Amino acid sequence: MLKAVFSITAITLAFAASSYAVETPKIDNREAKQEQRIDQGIRSGALTPKEEARLDAGQAKVEKMEEKAKADGHVTKHERKRIRHEQNVQDKKIHDMKHNAAHTN
Image 1 (cartoon, rainbow, N blue to C red):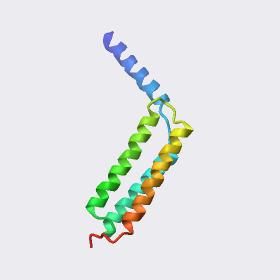
Image 2 (image 1 turned 180 degrees about the horizontal axis):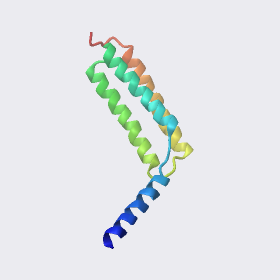
Image 3 (image 1 turned 45 degrees about the horizontal axis):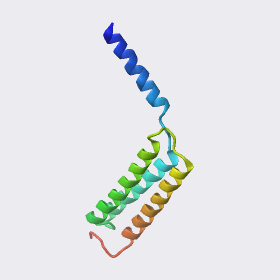
């Protein structure tokens, strides 16, 4: 009996958590594209390992901002604007580092 109660409670909690999941497809898609650009830069030699580490830290910052925005179950326009701004900053850093004089070749 107790096992059944725990099972029902776990299923109910899982369902409730999934119903409050916030979707941010534009943010997620851009994040994935930026990761692909970083990976391509490493493969081509346009980015050094040190530059990759810096860019990965910037991507982690964006991900943390997104998680924090999603924490209350709703991402506001202001939060989206802040995340978009930080993605713009990261976009410029990726471009600048891929096109600077430092290369691994």
